[in-house]
Image 1 (spheres, rainbow, N blue to C red):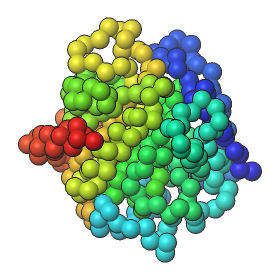
Image 2 (cartoon, rainbow, N blue to C red):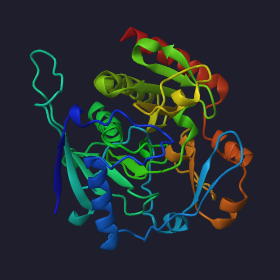
Image 3 (cartoon, rainbow, N blue to C red):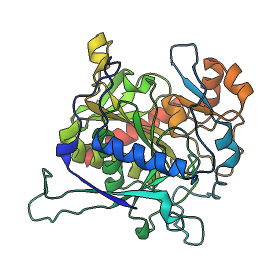
Image 4 (spheres, rainbow, N blue to C red):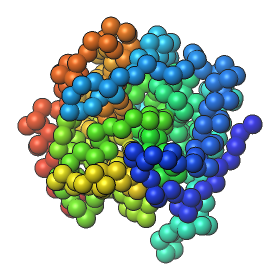
Length: 360
């Protein structure tokens, strides 16, 4: 039976720490995701049974988390043919209005009556987010967040979708709950607006990597480590304005035909200098990384792993055992680098993007 999950900012979990000896109790949101996902796994609704994945941390400063997930590479649905980052929604192609009803286990909606600021003269605009299983899961709890599927929106981020993604991370008491987005041309496999969510109980470098301020008043930064990209930071009280700024960036990228990946995770406050051990463990806020990249329209997939939202963040689901066991950090960087913008092109994009944001 489909569950309705009504929430407000009062439900956000603010005191989250990385590396705490005591595992936090699951929040109401966590319990909903875990129970709904486990129920569907036990009922055989996935393409394969996902047990504990073989995992290793690649030696090196980036701390890549490698996992062996052979069945996803074999059994996942064939990606749609994508020809443009602005490709229109096509109702004849696979979309989330065509899934089995049992794959949906929750509808999320923010309660406009509790603790939500609405500008004067405007009515609250609730957005229904349908939560369904990803039938070819990457990790435990792998689900999809789909803003009202009946709207038939193409795979281009909206402010409501970004807010739902950030809200979901804030609703979880686990520092390992992540949300991400692949645009068209950046390994999105379905042209129907959706975000991915899943649990990965391993620390990723993106949670604490040093940042260079670009527009501090918009909480907008550049990632200093590899892979270079942009990053926003927000705490529970500033989600609306940061979601708006994120969409200003992604709208610009879409208009300029730059495919991109986005990754949302708990993270420590932004800094451009090395932080204390205590500061590095703080996870009260959320980091939202955005990587503009080279387009992948009709290109052959990599044999080891595809470079999309989780790979750029440092989580590597490998398709075969040989690559899983033998690939080094240097080889990972070489693969990932092929999909990133050259340094000079990234710098030009950054200057144009900063100038654009400052005019808004």
